Image (tube, rainbow, N blue to C red; front, side):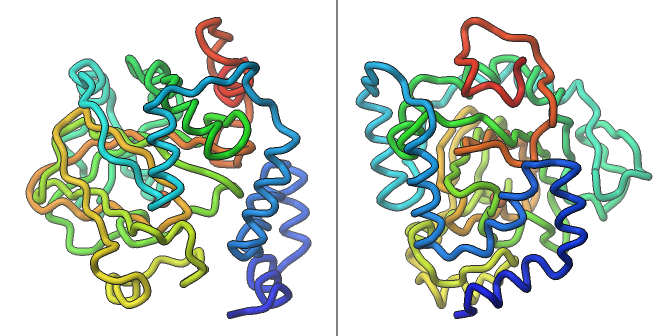
Length: 303
Ligand SMILES: [Fe+2]
């Protein structure tokens, strides 16, 4: 295993660039340095930070919140929940043209007509996702917020959000379609909502149970299936097939990926709950304050 100094050198090869990024966005400091920490150190940092962050007065989490938090601790992945009605959500994302940030020259395109086979994923902007019908209500579901507070030891911050179409028939897995750990925050989990039905043809999300509490393959790099099976065993690799409207949460430090769909496109919404804001969310809030939602938890997106 590499030493702290070696990890630091790999992570910050150029201190001038690190300082420039830090000046431009203070959130980049924690983000850039996080992979330097091993699992034990991450957990110590997360616990220490949580002790100084706000908690809910008279906190009484629901039985469901406790169940979700227990699942997260035990395996990193909760049982599937719902389904909730995603009809309006699907209509919203079908009516909004998507884009590929890695191929900006392709511009905007309809959800079912990606302009090139190079496009594996169709993305939406933060604004388009946060304004989607029912999204904020689901993201602020008391069971999920309760689970977050139990799991982190303090209130979470709703941070990185996204919605992506995965297109079928692509030869190469790209980005999040290969096994990876998320290094967004010292403590972090993600809510995934299947807006469309996900069966074996539609690219199931796959989680490696137990890898969130393991220091095997402590790396920010994408890993091959063979290396994951060797490290964690085939029985830990859990594909999730479920009807439209199903949601689940997982500790995204554990290895995960979305398989490339075989014959059907898949629409997935993801909402990340962090201990502190990452640079993967807007620098300034997009929406005005909404009295229904906790201002601390929603501070990244709401003024
Ligand atoms: Fe990820």
